[in-house]
Image (cartoon, rainbow, N blue to C red):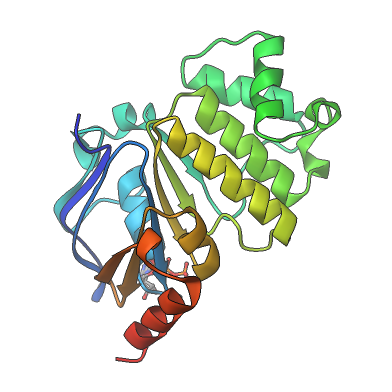
Length: 236
Ligand SMILES: Nc1ncnc2c1ncn2[C@@H]1O[C@H](COP(=O)(O)OP(=O)(O)OP(=O)(O)O)[C@@H](O)[C@H]1O
């Protein structure tokens, strides 16, 4: 399979609002694609189309070669999703949450294996047996990553995952993403964080009013150059 995530002329209209205009995009295993754009640019719409939460008005989204709208249940096996606030069951422990989500994905792990996934995702072992209701945002994001790893997701979709994380937690999160990409996961991240995009991205896309107006290889740019390009696009 060449591309783990693909969009072909993908568009979405809400009532009379054209939220996404003919997106064409291809992401390979191990690539990290960061999508920058102002509020309302169409980033969440794009992610929701890949998740199958909404259906395209025209065009198609593909995960692992399968058209999402026609295979909504099957594509969930290949996907992991980390929104701004990872949704977990607050009355269950981190370990119990991971056990639940990995069993829903068809994996039956021992307690030791679950613990290993959590600790490798940076959650302290003592925290794993505490209720998630008392976790910080950074700790919930780590459980989210552990779920993605435990279900062997081919694609990880993230919607502003680092907003509200302190610099240390945000840095740890970037390192986890780089490890996942090394292991072959294709990553698509919508973010407002230009610095992190440059740091972790293979490519950085800029979206404006529903259109992908630029795609840049992150390695070729300094963070301040990327910021300048981004701001230029916003002021056209
Ligand atoms: N359910 C909906 N019904 C009508 N319009 C919507 C709906 N969802 C989004 N929109 C509109 O579509 C456009 C794109 O929104 P979207 O949420 O995809 O942007 P975004 O880039 O994710 O913004 P943010 O950074 O604020 O999350 C916006 O103009 C928004 O108001």
